[in-house]
Amino acid sequence: MIKRNKKIKKVIGIGIILFFLVVGSVRSASASSIDFTFYTPQGKRYSLSQFRGKYVLVNLFASYCDYCTVELGIFNKIAQTCNSRELKIIAIMIDNENSFLLPKIVSARKLSYIIGLSTSEVFKAFSDFNRITPTTYFINKKGEKIQKFIGYKTYEEWLQILKKYVKCN
Image (cartoon, rainbow, N blue to C red; front, side, top):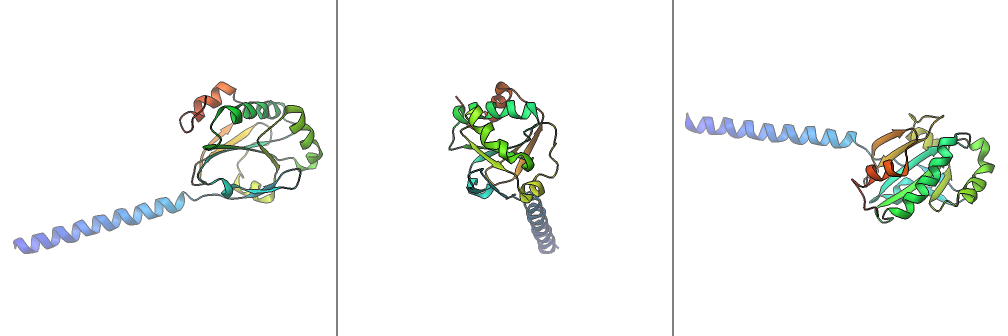
């Protein structure tokens, strides 16, 4: 009887371990990384996967959105303040019909981080973005979306968010 109880406990223990292994693998499969490509106005190609191992802020903006263009300057300051080995900032213009404005926006605001034009892959990866206000996604080091921000944020608000993950002066 004692040997049988030990066998039952062993089988139950193995069953519990297998259960948690299966649940854990299902959970990690659902948190999948995203990837997309986009191009700068100069034609340089980037993909999100190039930045694995770093946190990435992906800002989707429109040239007709005043708050969006103001926030571009804030991201420029953040790019200079936060450790570039830990954080990359990418801004992608969603209104491609106005793509001729992008070099003027970059030049006028003296933007020093990666700025590009949206592609169908970008729209697929971020299908829930807001077209009339700044929308920014925070991507972890594995390439997974971990947070979405809708609306304008000040420099101080962005620093508060980012300091939890990266070193900022």
